[in-house]
Image (cartoon, rainbow, N blue to C red; front, side, top):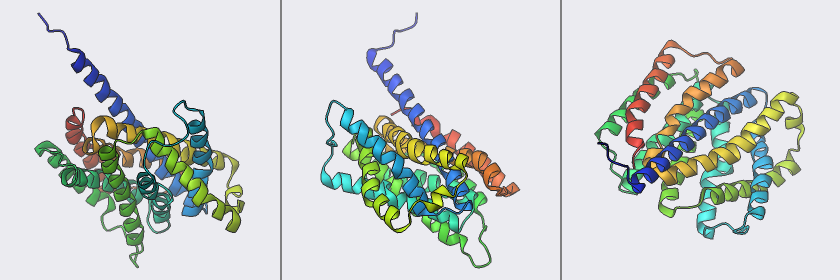
Length: 305
């Protein structure tokens, strides 16, 4: 005779599933974000152009949501917390993650940003939050590192300029990892985090961009690409992915949520290679396979809190 599930077990199962869906959604959107960022750079944009696209959409959308909600427009966090998350997730992150594509190809950015997030998140969770990582997760991390080595390899130009882009990608990933750790410690509402970051970008970056650069670079894009960039950069990446990832951190913990970005390279390359024309070598293909195996090793430990 089977035992009935307790209300606590049922509630936990629903919570874990919601956290899993949120994390997977964020990974898929980030893949599209990285791919479209590389395509935008290939079309003549730079990090400032992409950041302006992001906050021209995300800022007003999140401000409108704050104004309409019952709790009021004031974010439920301190000024220090608001400044910190804006510095970690706001314009500096976009400028680093997009600007790196001026030096390095899609395969580098699509791997190094999420991998730095994953590995940095695991390390900070252990050092700062004292979370136990476990043997299985460490094996998965080792396999992920092997995949990264194959994908990035020695793919630098004669002058080594790709290393500049790689450094920018790594810094961008670690900034997200730091946010994930603080998000779990502070337990900040996902909607408030997204609103603060979007509004901070709108008031700090967009005015200067419009005054000193104008909209010429954006208007020069083909209409279909401009609309796609506005949707992916502004709405999906600037709003929905941020809420989804913050939700996964809150429901699953920083270390567990940090495993989802291991899926991003697959999404980014699948979407981006046809757009950019970048080639994927055999070693890089094996690297992607290793990333997938590492994720399959790590994710079973990420489904229980």
